[in-house]
Image (cartoon, rainbow, N blue to C red):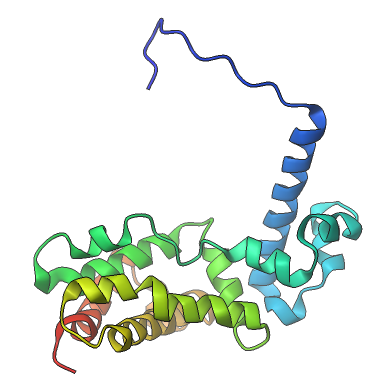
Amino acid sequence: MIGEGEMRPPRKKHSGRRAGVRSNQQVILDAARTEFSERGFEGTTMRAIARAAGVDAALIHHFFLSKGGLFSAAVQDVFTVPGLVTAVVDGEPEGMGERLARVYVRHWEDPETQPRLVGVLRSATAFEGASETIREFLGETLLPVAAKAGRGRHDLRASLCGTFLLGAAALRYVSRTGPTASLPASQVARLMGPTCQTYLCDRL
């Protein structure tokens, strides 16, 4: 953080073309997230994304090669939470489940992340890339958390937690079903906590 009166480093100069390329990519990604969120992978077309972004469809192919490549770029961080293991493990062992639920509910409540999540869930049965993203979440992203819980059968525990979290997310953010969709995020996380705790720490 730079205090008053301190010198700021000179900004690097970029050509107008480089700035324009970056801007076009971001506009395309934003449009794609909206389209994938509303229509899923199968129902989204490159033409619709190009129209929403105000660019030529050829430019999308230039940047992302295919609709699959664009989808992967648009949703790549939907399950990525910095410091996930530390956030869940630090604290009393009996609170791990609720901390895990809280971390992901908070992440998915973010207005920038939520459309990506919805796009993945709506596309899971239509596009292998979405299915692969979910498999990585179930089998890899949560695996270090389950391992730190130290209760054995880490792969099964990670899969159970992930499946439960995804099911709750589908109810809250995709189908927007009943009380699950209308409850405050903090209450949802608190109610999900005991189930996550069981999968992480109880005897299976």
